Image (cartoon, rainbow, N blue to C red; front, side):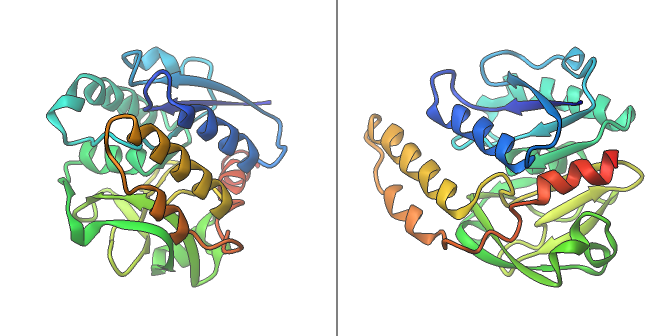
Length: 241
């Protein structure tokens, strides 16, 4: 049994937290996995969360930015946990917010910019390192991913290998050198259909606060282009055999 810690950054009553857990479970594809969920938004992260865990997945956030001063309360404890995972070589995968958290932790600025915004299904190309990486090389030279973000890591940290890029975001996927820790700006945790579900749910929640317009973004996800559907499962295979 592989024990996986899933760290979520969601409001306590968010339907998206439950949806994220369900999607991650599906992506592990029936492998013998025991998932423990922790929510860093509602409970301050502790390095002890890693005790007894074989791997960690740091998920997306929906509405929170790693560089927003209002996020400091939960971001810095998360970075302490991330540092322990890197020091102890705990296999990990950071998704969207988790990707940006790694970039920030490694000294790179994360910005909210229109030029770095992506929503929907977009084409990705592997770098030379991506073609050689045991996890990413199985995707082929070009593939499609599902993504939704306004923040991005502004440059490649010195201590990672850049694995993939898109036209809008050069810093699309990383692997920390000498560690079994991967991150991606895109979402390998969802299929296009699940991404549509997530955006519909997010639109419903946002409407409660007078924010509208999110529903239309669901249409940008292309059914059938689920090229990274097996990535999280293969991550476990690469790390644990």
